[in-house]
Picture (cartoon, helix red, strand yellow):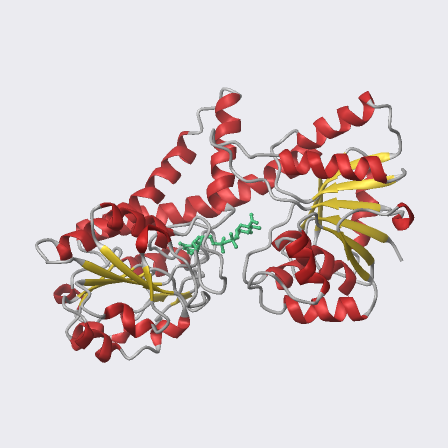
Length: 454
Ligand code: UGA
């Protein structure tokens, strides 16, 4: 049974540790943050991740998962995974301080031979830098391998157990084969690449996803201007097997802790190596324009109102998570508050004790955000919002504008309740005539109304 050490008990590290135990391996999970470690040792997951807590419980009961703050001499791992965060620095580049700190801790405490696997999303060349440091310090017997993750928050464990592919970037076939063997029970193709290609693949994948979203948002703006309906346009292009339907949901744009920082790092790396990366710049620009466009519509609806107020439904960067990092909702709220508009907000994943910035009032009941609101924006595509008492909301509001920031309420006929219903890239209420049955859900899945002829 291979012995694995995982450094970092965040979304990636905890999912990896629990997943590796589920695959039959023995894992030591290290995290230097006492509060996080206390949680995990008690079988609690310190963030919202469906299914993870249950599997963490099984892993702890099996005794094949040990959690501690520091490595111990008798750990003797054959594999050490670095799974710590690489946040965005002020210059846009990824901050790899945590990765090098983790590497330093491990290398001082672990006797070779072992394989050092970089799971964190790191700038291209990080594996090479670590390898050079090992050579400089004359440490032999440590293979450095890149094994990027493609987990989505909200379905991380499922994505670990059923990935589209496993990517392994290594300098030697021996090291690559050892890492591949760890995933032997997972029914997915293993793709072997150079270490630099593996590192870049992760950034390129996130950049591709962001590009698709910005593309569909740009087409949504063009649809709006030309009187077309983005739901139909996205359904049509997504049904082309060369294009596919995923990540074509228009709305407030992409956010989270990964896409924004990874696009920034990729641009930074490209520019510092003389590549203009114009497309990435445009992708980011279109994305920030979505929040500005939304805020503009909401501001217009409150103009001239006494004590202008907007209700915001949804704070998480997407449904299924309690993560508000890089959330498009906050981008809109910041703009509204900046122009003197009061904001009342709700999110099903936040507790009523949530302290919101900029004096935003938190409402424990989603209907409450509508009280005397001049306009409402639905910023996160929580399924529960589809079940709200919309007539009650309409009656509680002072104004009538509802902006569907995720284009997923179109089939609720909110206009019939007296709302001025707006979504991105859809014709005005009068033009729409309730004809389109195509519908895009927040995860990019298209519900397409297709009539077969003959
Ligand atoms: C993303 C990638 O999808 C994962 O493959 C990757 O492993 C992860 O980053 C990471 O680098 O760790 P995640 O941050 O969980 O995962 O979020 P996504 O599901 O990709 O969504 C990103 C944003 O795009 C969200 O704000 C979402 O609402 C938005 N989005 C998504 C759209 O606006 N339209 C869509 O059609 C799809």
